[in-house]
Image (cartoon, rainbow, N blue to C red; front, side):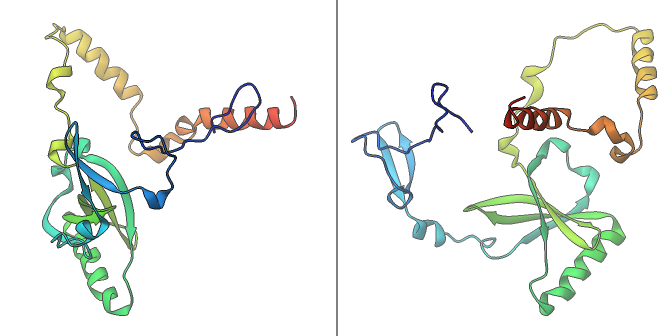
Length: 199
């Protein structure tokens, strides 16, 4: 939480109208699309609900691909466990999970979340299906502008780097044990406990 340093009072965020300065409640706030600086088109929940999105009520499978065909930079839009909604949905759910498991593919899917169409991958995880959100191509920044200039390296320098990597190699994240402990959170909890006890 953010607090006022002088008296410890909690700092709150208020939504205010930039025209009249009035503090607004959630039911007084709507959505709008800014066409240019001084022109906003209001968009209602009904406008959005009536959009012709085939993914509004269902997940649409677009293709089946090898998992390795998806660049890791596309991941990052959240992951969700899916469940079968009743006995009628159980059979296709289990059938899809087992088919994906058997041929080691993933399903590229489109789905709606928070009023937007999203891209994702469906894959088996244990006895469940996991839907991992993907970024659309236009949401990913090109690394070309960030790359350093060409740099000369010797074979000996590269071999040294490879040798270091070999000494730090692991087959799975689980093997790293304590190396993956979140020391910051542990230390923060200790600080909070100490302050709560006036230490």
